Image 1 (cartoon, rainbow, N blue to C red):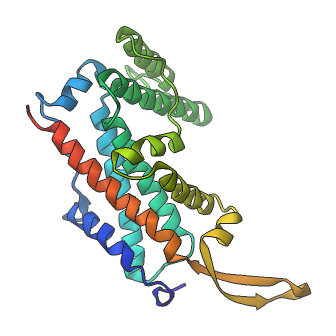
Image 2 (image 1 turned 90 degrees about the vertical axis):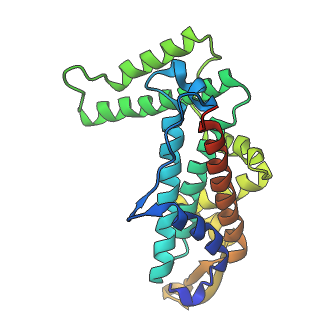
Length: 255
């Protein structure tokens, strides 16, 4: 479909935030935390498995997802699915950064960071097995890094590491951004339905525009974005982005 059927004015505040984070064709990363900052104190015993690295890469990935939607909108290449899937990715990224920053207490924040690193290296190990590609020389495999990560957690006497679940991250991050968790979860579920090609979101979160008759009495329904359903997702993305940036800068500054 073209932008003739898509107003999308509600996306402009989010796009404005994204454009502010762009410079010379690239996204400005969040700065490394100052050595005397609260965030640096969180990360001090984690070695290479710092929360700050995960937060910064999640922030940049979220910007890229949202900016892809901005560019599609400018080009007039809006379809009924991509706006949902792109903002789903952005929301997950921004929520992950907030979840890492907002843990209740230093021990829990460290546990969250190591849990995410552990899951990251589990996925790496799977890829190494699937592809047959292993590090050479002094490089460590994903499995070896998981062992190292779990040893750090044991040394710090942290609660057991557990693979983070996206829905649980969203529910935990939403209140930190001043949002209602169940509403954020509902928007994310609809976006996930589109991302996975499910049937129900087309009935719940799209608007029919036309029905084209086909053979044997079967009709093809032309759908467009239901902006009333998509608008909250865009708003949640912008709010989480702003909260992530503000809280990161506050915790990464020298004390």
